[in-house]
Length: 103
Image (cartoon, rainbow, N blue to C red):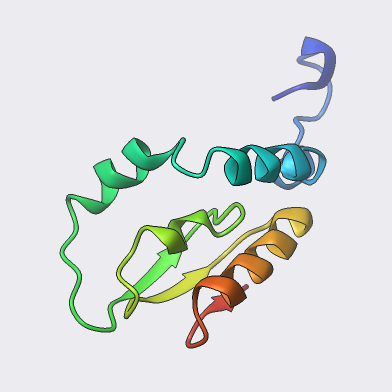
Protein backbone atom coordinates (compact mmCIF):
# COMPACT_ATOMS: atom_id res chain seq x y z
CA UNK A 1 0.00 0.00 0.00
CA UNK A 2 1.33 3.43 -0.92
CA UNK A 3 0.46 6.78 0.55
CA UNK A 4 -1.40 9.07 -1.87
CA UNK A 5 -1.28 6.33 -4.56
CA UNK A 6 2.24 7.49 -5.46
CA UNK A 7 4.03 4.33 -6.59
CA UNK A 8 7.41 6.07 -6.30
CA UNK A 9 7.09 6.33 -2.52
CA UNK A 10 8.10 3.56 -0.17
CA UNK A 11 5.23 1.18 0.63
CA UNK A 12 3.60 1.54 4.02
CA UNK A 13 4.35 -1.47 6.19
CA UNK A 14 1.67 -3.60 7.85
CA UNK A 15 2.82 -2.53 11.31
CA UNK A 16 2.57 1.16 10.38
CA UNK A 17 -0.93 0.74 8.96
CA UNK A 18 -2.20 -1.16 11.98
CA UNK A 19 -0.45 1.08 14.49
CA UNK A 20 -2.73 3.79 13.06
CA UNK A 21 -5.87 1.63 12.82
CA UNK A 22 -5.62 -0.55 15.92
CA UNK A 23 -7.97 1.54 18.07
CA UNK A 24 -10.78 1.70 15.51
CA UNK A 25 -10.36 -1.95 14.53
CA UNK A 26 -10.44 -3.06 18.15
CA UNK A 27 -13.50 -0.88 18.82
CA UNK A 28 -15.27 -2.58 15.89
CA UNK A 29 -14.36 -6.05 17.16
CA UNK A 30 -15.58 -5.18 20.68
CA UNK A 31 -18.82 -3.71 19.33
CA UNK A 32 -19.53 -6.57 16.88
CA UNK A 33 -17.58 -9.55 18.31
CA UNK A 34 -19.03 -12.04 15.82
CA UNK A 35 -18.36 -9.94 12.71
CA UNK A 36 -15.53 -12.28 11.68
CA UNK A 37 -17.20 -15.51 12.83
CA UNK A 38 -17.49 -16.94 9.30
CA UNK A 39 -13.86 -16.12 8.56
CA UNK A 40 -12.64 -17.90 11.70
CA UNK A 41 -15.05 -20.81 11.19
CA UNK A 42 -13.92 -21.38 7.59
CA UNK A 43 -10.36 -21.85 8.79
CA UNK A 44 -11.06 -23.74 12.01
CA UNK A 45 -13.60 -26.13 10.46
CA UNK A 46 -10.71 -27.56 8.40
CA UNK A 47 -8.64 -28.17 11.54
CA UNK A 48 -8.89 -30.91 14.11
CA UNK A 49 -7.70 -29.95 17.55
CA UNK A 50 -6.00 -32.43 19.84
CA UNK A 51 -5.67 -31.73 23.55
CA UNK A 52 -3.24 -28.90 24.12
CA UNK A 53 -2.70 -28.28 20.40
CA UNK A 54 -0.10 -25.57 19.74
CA UNK A 55 -1.39 -22.86 17.38
CA UNK A 56 0.49 -19.83 16.07
CA UNK A 57 -1.82 -16.88 15.36
CA UNK A 58 -0.04 -14.57 12.89
CA UNK A 59 -0.74 -11.78 12.34
CA UNK A 60 -2.65 -11.91 15.58
CA UNK A 61 -4.31 -8.50 15.39
CA UNK A 62 -5.96 -8.07 18.74
CA UNK A 63 -5.80 -11.77 19.60
CA UNK A 64 -9.37 -12.37 18.45
CA UNK A 65 -8.72 -15.95 17.32
CA UNK A 66 -8.42 -16.89 20.99
CA UNK A 67 -12.19 -16.69 21.38
CA UNK A 68 -12.72 -19.28 18.64
CA UNK A 69 -10.37 -22.14 19.51
CA UNK A 70 -10.87 -24.79 22.20
CA UNK A 71 -9.86 -23.63 25.67
CA UNK A 72 -7.13 -26.26 26.00
CA UNK A 73 -5.37 -24.92 22.89
CA UNK A 74 -1.91 -23.49 23.49
CA UNK A 75 -2.18 -20.30 21.50
CA UNK A 76 0.78 -18.08 20.66
CA UNK A 77 -0.10 -14.66 19.27
CA UNK A 78 2.53 -13.13 16.97
CA UNK A 79 1.96 -9.51 15.99
CA UNK A 80 4.29 -6.95 14.41
CA UNK A 81 2.10 -3.93 15.12
CA UNK A 82 2.98 -2.50 18.52
CA UNK A 83 -0.53 -1.11 19.05
CA UNK A 84 -2.23 -4.40 18.20
CA UNK A 85 0.17 -6.31 20.43
CA UNK A 86 -1.10 -4.24 23.38
CA UNK A 87 -4.69 -5.37 22.67
CA UNK A 88 -3.42 -8.90 22.14
CA UNK A 89 -1.90 -8.99 25.62
CA UNK A 90 -5.10 -7.70 27.23
CA UNK A 91 -7.34 -10.19 25.39
CA UNK A 92 -4.94 -13.10 25.98
CA UNK A 93 -4.98 -12.43 29.71
CA UNK A 94 -8.78 -12.28 29.67
CA UNK A 95 -9.34 -15.45 27.63
CA UNK A 96 -6.69 -17.68 29.15
CA UNK A 97 -4.50 -17.89 32.17
CA UNK A 98 -1.95 -20.35 30.78
CA UNK A 99 0.60 -20.90 28.00
CA UNK A 100 -0.48 -17.84 26.11
CA UNK A 101 2.28 -15.70 24.72
CA UNK A 102 2.36 -12.52 22.70
CA UNK A 103 5.56 -12.21 20.71
